[in-house]
Image (tube, rainbow, N blue to C red; front, side, top):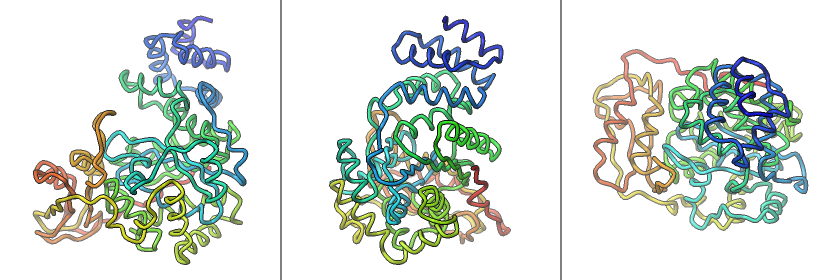
Length: 433
């Protein structure tokens, strides 16, 4: 087999066989196929696409390129959740304890964030003492005991995907449905889940800007999951404004805690009910989705969800008392209000601008080597549809730097005000089974 022949085959729109895809991924992982040939193949895939069979084989070949987590000794159906990423997306931190409180095992590997805030792992490290390092045995034991553990991804999980992702980033081939779908699903399958719930974001703060794009990606990932024997469901959710009211690591932990106490923002609550009901149903813990939603709401109301969070934090070395006193989370030195310059209804909040503003405060990483300030971030007081008087606070900046004029300007630019009442976008656009 010659790589140049396979590049030409895909360039001409033909399907690659299982053997050919295995040859490519194995050769690339072992450095036997050079970057320039994989770049050419990625561009051919970008223009010619892949069929469902090719996508599933590409996913599995990347899974097989490294370690695979064996979760068979964990009792019950293991359900994982993945978000394609957005601004203020702290869903996992609230959702995982919610479903764990109902006996659904959540054995989760998460990554660190590159962008406007840290990833789930970074956010959890806002809790004093919390450790994301567990041995495989401890990880499995904790899930069996508490139904929940979250750790960092192992270095050798889907190494082919890591190499290919880095190459796509510099060759203009990131935005390719088969390459995105196989990248996401390879990590989930290598992590050992029996069932997968996907939260595919769409809007100004998401990778996919249009609903039809998000639908195409969601369908591709669900098809891959089905072909590889995993129950998979995708929810397409709105990211035309930040989720909840906070963007920033410790701030988002605080907001997740509030939700589990029944005090969280409406959109975050609705999304957790939607995603959580799918997880509980797939795990066989509810007769239907309506029953699953009732069960989730009940563990918020009876306090079992907050107890689940405390047990999880304590099991991984974190201080569970932060749940009762969120002032023990990292606090910024300066609170600076961003005031509205005119009255009106909020028509639009450009989510990625809010994300950029949070990163400039230090909440995220501009590069892989950047350090994160866990205390800083942005608290939004007004969201789409809200009425604002001139001089009222649109947002509060939580900063450890007194010089925040540039950040204030970015936040103001993110808000668009009009005189008439505004209809909000739906939070959930579609569900793909």
